[in-house]
Length: 133
Image: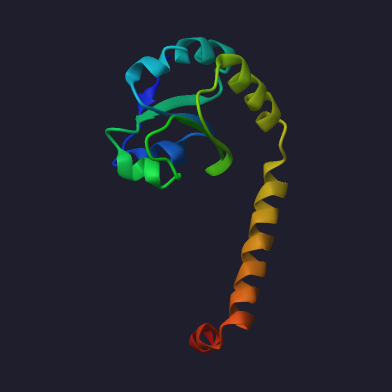
């Protein structure tokens, strides 16, 4: 299985249709050479890459300028984001850890955090509170 190229046009569709997505932000296409090895080690994940120089706006949404990075999504939730190059062993280890996570609990925690932030905003800013009442 080869890697899919991600761009601003297909990004959402790839994230939405992938149970687990390993997305590399790369500076050149030569950085995706280990994806064939990853595909054999982690057959359940979708492998994709995005060239930072060709898609700078998409890269910036992840806080990237002119650097490589690894982003791992599971069920459309970002579980890992770190700048720099990640070798096959590191990605394989991360995927083992991510596969053991309880996604229902993670979604519940995210919803609780969103609710707490919304409550804080209503308390902190009377203008916002007035608009929502």
